[in-house]
Image 1: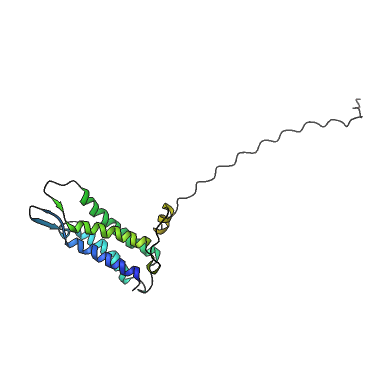
Image 2 (image 1 turned 45 degrees about the horizontal axis):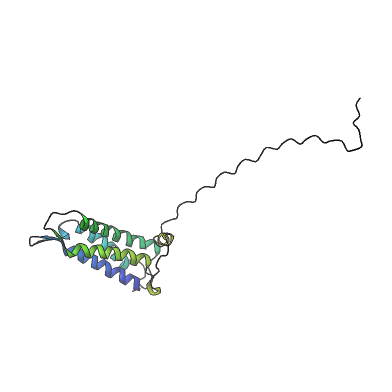
Length: 171
């Protein structure tokens, strides 16, 4: 199996494991992710893992268009976990290891998918344009050029004066 696929699969499994670990605890009781939104994060990480495992030839890198179907669900899982981590909570309630694991795995999956080139190592972006290119986000359309200013109207030419030495003949 290609190196990047292996890493995507490993991170997806770690994210799925986070679903079954405690998400919160209070007064000696714990709540795992499967008692709430954990099924959503499980499905989101399963999408990335299934794509890495079943899509195309395992010895070849995933195609760029398919990579979007790996990093977007992982980013959504990370957002779900981060919202739960930073949401205000009552006194005595502590966040469990499962949410932290899901947030870390989701963020890692996004960076791994976008910036790891497999055998070629990391391709760290140097600008926002590099990030957009890695994420296959099309560039904004160019601003239409301003219309050219209308040409100045031609000024009528002054009547030609008779050559010197000749007088104008009047009849």
